[in-house]
Amino acid sequence: MESVFRADVLKGKTALITGGGSGICFEISTQFGKHGAAIAIMGRRRHVLDAAVGTLRSQGIRAIGIEGDVRKSEDAARVIESTIRHFGKLDILVNGAAGNFLASPEDLSPKGFKTVLDIDSVGTYTMCHEALKYLKNGGPGKGPSTGGVILNISATLHYRATWYQIHVSAAKAAVDSITRSLALEWGSDYDIRVNGIAPGRIDGTPGMQKLRPKEVTETGQGLMPLDRSGEKWDIAMAALYLASDAGKFVNGTTLIVDGGYWLSQPRHISKEEVKKISRIVEKNSRESTVGIPTSKL
Image 1 (cartoon, rainbow, N blue to C red):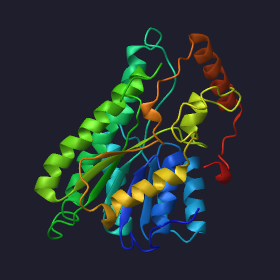
Image 2 (image 1 turned 90 degrees about the horizontal axis):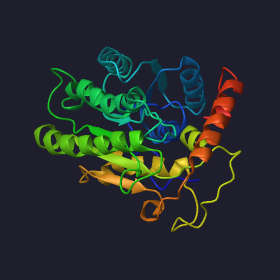
Image 3 (image 1 turned 90 degrees about the vertical axis):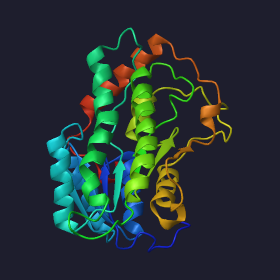
Image 4 (image 1 turned 180 degrees about the vertical axis):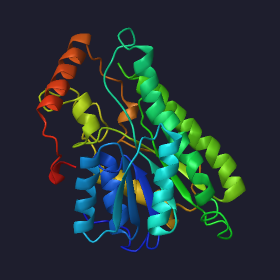
């Protein structure tokens, strides 16, 4: 699909995108790069980073991949500093690293619950905290505010309630709260805009493959007002809007991009179906190759 934005709408900007090597966030990386930004991708898997960076560079996009875990402050600081050393500055931070799986509360251990909160919620705050000194003024001693941008990838799961997603719902509710609080304080103090995007059901993503593998027959059609799933491109265009001057007066908002699906009644999933899906995901994971083909990113 052809973008509605000018090709230079992010010209001269540098964006760091956590989880930017696959799924929705890889599409954000791609579209930001196609629209002029230099791209740094943070992730835990080197082979995913290498494949993503190779694809971006093949399209003429300046890109690097840096290994790191958003849960670790030392990794967050190192990745941000590496981005600054390579590109000279940081203008946009996209927090997209996340964890998800289906689990009923009685089967979900506190450790499993905490793991998702650590990645989604604590990881988002950790990256924001470490990036602040660069976003607020282009780095120590580099002059006045540059009006940096933070985008936090959320979800719609917690706006009503979603079966077997208590861990992710809690984590994303926290992400939405972080977005509002930082928008209030850092918008006032440093002219930093902090917004979120809440994607719905997006085809062709690792998250959807975990929650609804292709081997499982879909029975939820007709529940969505637009009666279709979204595309990664839809989320990337929303991110471009919020990161560019088109959204320069938008602050503290989490933009829902789900075709209105969150308005519908959540479909009940049986425990048996959850177990079936989990077995399929585990089997697919074991059978997958070590490298991820570029076409699957």
